[in-house]
Amino acid sequence: MAGRFYDDWAVGDTIAHEIRRTVTETDNLLFTVMTHNPQPLHLDAEAARASEFGQILVNGTFTFALMVGLSVGDTTLGTLVANLGYDKLVMPKPVFIGDTLRAETQVHALKESRSRPDAGIVTFAHRLHNQRDEIVCQCLRSALIKRSAA
Image 1 (tube, rainbow, N blue to C red):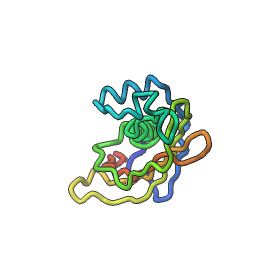
Image 2: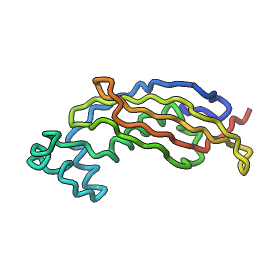
Image 3: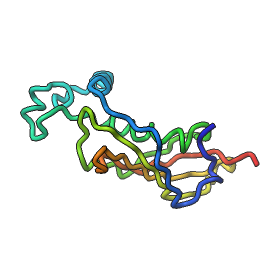
């Protein structure tokens, strides 16, 4: 198990996740069609070329899902009870095919669970950066995390 228990976190803890991911055309195409998103900016090279961006934009929900996915191994793998919600999701810069993305996470808040004495709520601040160190996505994620058995 790679994730941490509720008791192991402190506000301000920061992790630079080691796994990076270069986004491919196939990633964008498969995610876009699997989610039935017909946005031409994600699927139509000619429409995208005529846009202000001049190229295909990577689907934003893929970008968000990748950011959270890159964090799981270091944060909640094996310790998660449930994700409770996502807040303040923003995408300040576009993601393009060929961008290499990396994630970092900081513990924003800790809260005891009133209904689950065996768990607590950790609020993570996730940030996703491209190869130019620009933030392309960020959010707060609240997760119900198991307490350690010890």
